[in-house]
Length: 154
Image (tube, rainbow, N blue to C red; front, top):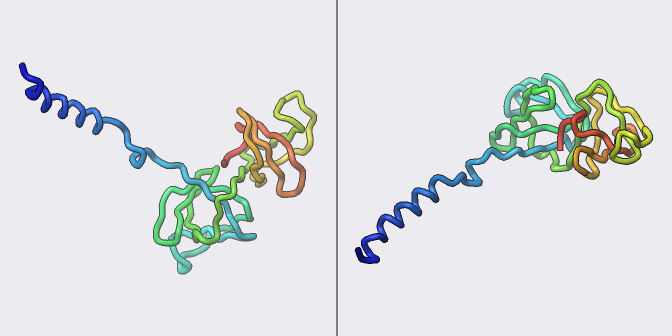
């Protein structure tokens, strides 16, 4: 058998293998944003004519689940969904407390002294990540490490 008679079979095998690989564009991307203004309106649709059901404060984190023009469809840590105006958001990482109480510690260890306590829904500015811990600054002041399982965001 000649070398050239195997070429179509090799090309076909290569093409099928290449098509079977997952593409980067096919993988769901988890884009996160945070409120960049002091008070951000959470709307029922993508536009100012839609009703504002509630508001959030600066730094509140969201997962982007859709887009329409300059509007982002977002969900929060409670899986509530709303539309926000994209220019009023930022790529500044924040977390929100999803536990009843989250303890901020001096270092990333459960044996480390407590610096501050944060309550459910408190917004925390993300400063650093280390394993299962996140170093944060509380919106009311105070910096410390919190266990990642107690917060939601990025």
